[in-house]
Image (cartoon, rainbow, N blue to C red; front, top):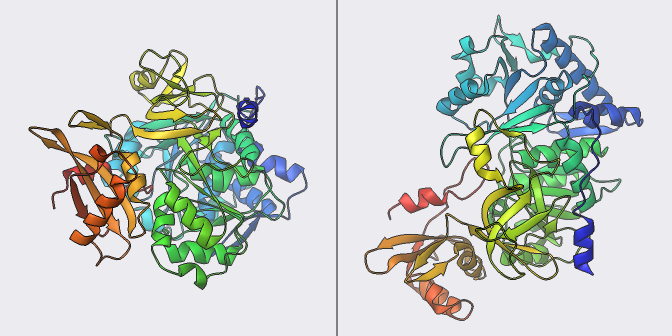
Length: 523
């Protein structure tokens, strides 16, 4: 039975006492004889495991020579590129802690992260270095610039020639890296992960999508996000597979061209990119996508309509998954299980439960709070300098996600939305994702977002913001079509009272819809 398989895949990975992230990602593949195998490919060429190891060694030795020591934090300000990988792994190799932040972060957030993380140094691409150059006094151990260091600056290209150094023997639960959230609901949080994470999540992801000999893995999104750092960098390296590097910010055409150019077999992207791609009629006919064996989606709800259309037009499944920055992938669809469109799948190397407000598991089919067992070796070490916030989400033996969900009798989970996104209208509890998925079933709708509008008499009215596939299609006729369709698919008292049309929805740096920004937007 499916439920028996789900229980088997919830087993935790066995973690040795001593683990170093770079040893797992580079040293072990080299020991297995993969030196001549391609580790990364991109618009700047190819990098074998041996070439990667040489650069990582050089960067590590150069950082050590600059006085960067074990446990000290170093900010990485780069988009996806070979240099990002070298810097990240070089720092982990000496026991320093790389700190990632989205490259689109502005000066205010850069200033906050430098101060909050206590970074002693930074490494950046020249195009992104400006806010670090003006804050050089904060960096006691310097700024390293790639692709265009100025006179007197430390050049990345020089530091990777610094020599060789042994990988530090770190403890499994020693801090390995920090990732900062985008800060859309307040100041960014510094999430600290241990070296054990690469084994705990790496094993689970290997089980979920077993690697194949010809695999090439690519993510259309920044590696500053822990999901894509794992899927496009650390897990492929550990599995002996090449990762394709897409440096440019993703558009449908850039995404599909990269799949063709690098013969990508497994791709990762946010649902928005899949929807934007499908909104262009016949775009798939312009590219050779025959290498693909499957795609992955995370970050927000994919929806059954997007999944089904992608399968029909592109010919492969999208394995939707749910994750949190405090762990990475938690629950997912997989090629090893039947896909239930609209579901986020089953747990992998995780014990998850749907609970009521008293922390008791609720019966199958009932909506409650989604929680993850906090003893999982993938779990973060805590929020940097914020034990109060850590205690707020980790208590009673569980990590509380803040998401609402329900589980069916086969063990599949279904997200019902963020608890703070749900609202009441005329006394009825409204779950926006239910209405959004229903709206997405209409062929004229590319994206949809549902939110409340305060109302003196009714508490809240239901507002739907629609991005039509054809910008000229938004109007009264489409509104009537949508109302008629919804009345046959969801409860009539959940049909939106207000419909608005926009060319695009506001998105965060990682591609999530910024619902709060929409709520503040007045048409």
